Image 1 (cartoon, helix red, strand yellow):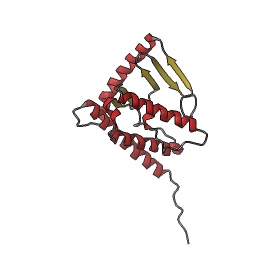
Image 2: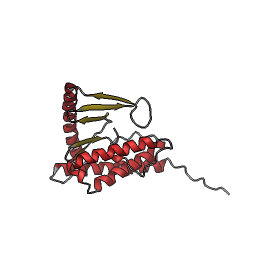
Image 3: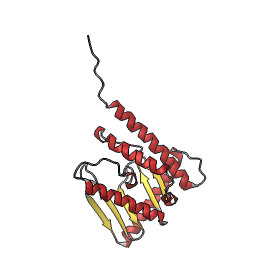
Image 4: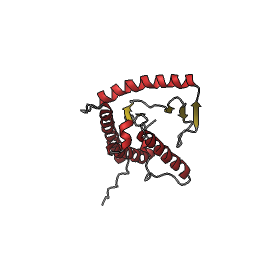
Length: 190
């Protein structure tokens, strides 16, 4: 997807009536961080470099970017087990949870969330998805470090810092696009 559930924040604006959706996203984020704190490895593939956000969605994108930037700058203990990579193209929203399941979310229109979800629990399907995601992740690891170089010797920290640079660049792009779309003040003629 775009930035991952880890970009969701409590201060983010949701339309009235979307409280259950907001709460579900915050719970998903809490659970993911809890897994990472307990030692589970999270591999996050995000795509902030090619923002195809409509003008009315820029505030939403900027808030999510700020949330994720703040998280990446923090000393959260989950960082010890999170690997970040940047994709130059949109990715599917998917989760692989060990050998338990592989889940993919699909959109049928421009709406919050993924109304169509495919969940596989078959061992072969999970293994196949894991193998494909591993190949993709390794290629995106190389891409991330080449496109947004970092000086860290520790690869995990280097990927985090590279991702942070990319997110800051994407936020500047969004802010520039938002400024360009603001109505211009009318000049007074006498």
